[in-house]
Length: 303
Ligand SMILES: [Fe+2]
Ligand SMILES: [Fe+2]
Image 1 (cartoon, rainbow, N blue to C red):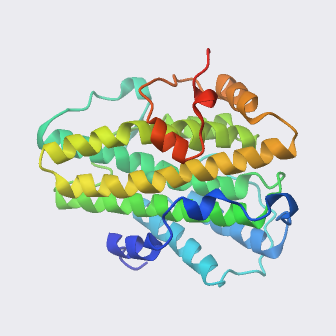
Image 2 (image 1 turned 30 degrees about the horizontal axis):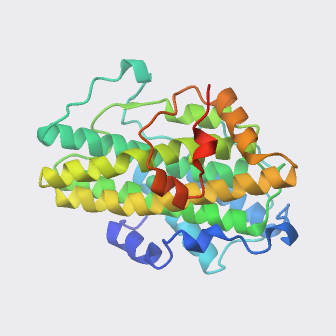
């Protein structure tokens, strides 16, 4: 496995990071559904390999390689895939995964606080790689248009870029991913919605990733104020990409609701009530949420 350079990830993905590329699906209503065609079969096997990879940097590299091979049309179309889908992703021995209630309180300032923040973000991004590739292979019984798979491949590659940028920054500060414990609550959302693609889209991109849009600008401000421009710049990249991820989630959620003749707002609120245990609390980043196609009427409701 060749060494991953964060710059390479950034350069390859740079040209298409604006959300406009994703907001208008081409003739979704008439799009051919991507059932068990060879490309999907091959993609499913590749997505499983990413999910099961136990080494964090190799997982990120593998995610990026799957994306680029599909971009170039180099995917293997001869392999049939009839295997089941793993319940959990492969993970490295370190970091130790703790119940969220057992996590030590993070230091808020200084060098240790900065490492703590970057480590927590790297853990979120590693989970995000798995969540994107899980979407590509888990829901084989819900056939989707080809564009759906390409959208989530790009999301997965961007999550890999985010992980490697944070890992690079941690290393330059004398640490690395695995040096601190991390919590195991993030995969819970995946397990709760493992049977229902629309519910997964409501909870993961449209609740969890949307929350990222609310909190990231303050983190960028704080890092900048504390003189850590390198980390602030990485978070800027992540913030811009994450708007697109929420937009992709909203787009495909609306597509599924339209197909099932359901009202998207009511469905979103039902799924959040049923499958998301946390709070959806202000302050909300309304401009970023609006930009991502997530209207206020969806997420402000009595629970
Ligand atoms: Fe990300
Ligand atoms: Fe994301």
